[in-house]
Length: 421
Image 1 (cartoon, rainbow, N blue to C red):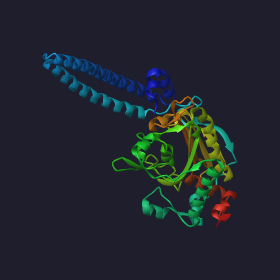
Image 2 (image 1 turned 60 degrees about the vertical axis):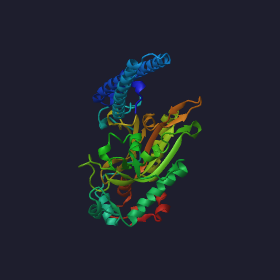
Image 3 (image 1 turned 120 degrees about the vertical axis):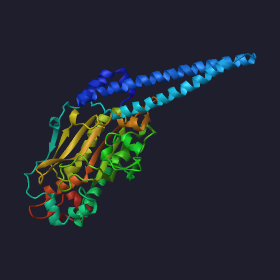
Image 4 (image 1 turned 180 degrees about the horizontal axis):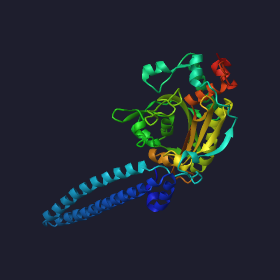
């Protein structure tokens, strides 16, 4: 959430930065400021009436001590109370409306984020490995041939967008999860967490999934609780409404959880196989830091996710997203896209994003700086990585034509063998 003083003090700057995302966002600034002005005027009138009421109350006290008539003044004081109550109700409504409008304004892009209004304007900043030529056998054919998963029975159980991993396929998924968690905790220094899958509404608001993406989420109890769409939600909110010590920062947290998403806007997109799922596992990486640490921590976070693909010998490239493709909460994002030869395409397996204090303001997450002042933390997150597309790339890259899946060496001890099939 953007700070209201920034909108008041420099609305043109905010409008200019929002216009880098989309010119359609610019009027949102004026809508907030109009509401803010009405709210402040109403609150000022309440304060004026309160002051006048207090003055008259003192005057009534003096008159009563002199045994003088006070009924007229007392009626006037009562009328002030009625007016104040109505004005305060209006001020509260305006406050709620202002918060609603503020929550809808996306984050301002980082000064280094490339401008652009289409994903084609994302910038490839580095590449690793040599993508293999397109293969005729994709992960669906491989999975069926090696008995790794069953899509038909999953559809029978839950509908489309689900998978049942079976036998060696289930063991491979578990091996990948353990490999990822061990890499990030033992080598990269993250603290592993076990997080709940149901979270409260205000927790979803804290990281920005709500109100914008409510239709994509699985909500319960009249929208008061939600199945978590990513461990980012619970990990980043873990310290919500707290004041951290500066020496604790940066905090580095990781968790593997099932993720639940309706993907209601995904009709016709990557619907074959396990590329786009309603339920999937993901290892999430979250960082909470000081403002001056954030730029460097984004680079480190991205390198941590890249290391996964390097160790699994999967060619990939890193894109820096342009302003028009940037997520609403992010100010800067690197996407890692892994090459999947069976698709003949790159698939996104991680988005590593920097949020500034945008999320921290929503969840009131602060730290006490060296001068003793409470300051909002900066937050970052990235997938380290999402399992389905990593699984797809692994199968399509390392399976021999019509033959066995040869596992990269780091997975041998986790899976208990060097190959499948």
